Length: 486
Image (cartoon, rainbow, N blue to C red):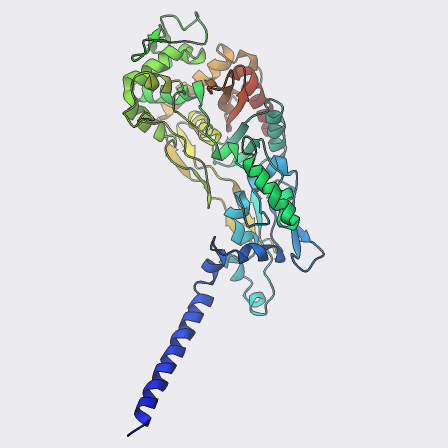
């Protein structure tokens, strides 16, 4: 019997197995290494992340998040956050159990030096085993205005509040403020078990401090949504700011109840120019518009502003979806009373502050909305630029003519309408006071633009509590915009 033949077969088979193993190892170590390292199911990435010199998150001349040596072998570095309660909606957090949010997760691979754009630049360091220092992320945030916004929000409610300010020409976000908030330093990895317990407490706390109210929480927009309804009606029917509209009492079709105005008299009596009905926020006008245009038109018109989709602010950083439903909660087509209430931003209409700032941006920028973004540049530690924001158009929500009319209508809200208390504050906008169904608590909005002449910024402010919007949200907006314009 020839023993060489089966031996050769076994040898060849063994060599093939070794070859297959080598190919697999090289594939995993090479092509798939970064994907496996960054996989959300890989817990080792969180254990190791602070043994590397993680980059900083910066706003203006201020460092919001940075790493410094801990004096320990593991973790070698610890994460420091400046004024975390104020800036956590921007920075996000890293926790000791691997949880993360905000820019800390959206730009994690660049911050911790693992991104290909960094490793390719420092290939020799990688070759000799020297870790690559993380890149620095430069945000669009105005730190002084962010502080003014947080302090203003905190002073007006013990519930939820938020503010967003965006540059209408670029989409750069200047303010992203949220209340209640949290301090990411108290749950950073160096806090260990204590930080894990704090994270669990925050996760169960009232009003969800870990949730960014500016981007990821929705509220009933109330009468601020009349801006969208007016834009749709003006587009569909060719109306302008001087067109005569009905302001007389509206009887809702299902219950036969009246849809009340916030006040009797003035423009809200029988008929009025559209600019007056808007300035005095006549519910009957905009409830009737919604009933006439039907749910599908209201929904598709709102979609032009971004409703019905998550807004991509940065990679892995999406807003919550604002909603103008076409169906009742029961699944039946939307109609009747709830359709009328949708026209005044009630019923099941929901919007994020970011979305309403985008509505105001369309008004102030000839109908055009620029894509919102939070990161201006990313730089390696040698100051070489790895990324620079490229402003992009998000949507043309309406014609420039309709937008120009709405801009005058927002100004009329301050000069003659529901927010005359804001005269002389160099802002224009639309009030919104939406009932929450919780006692006398309202979602109080002011949404608009500034400066009045040659607008540069759009904003949205919402705060929960009793009372109306002009005082409780309008004054906050004026304070915030004063800080932005300095």
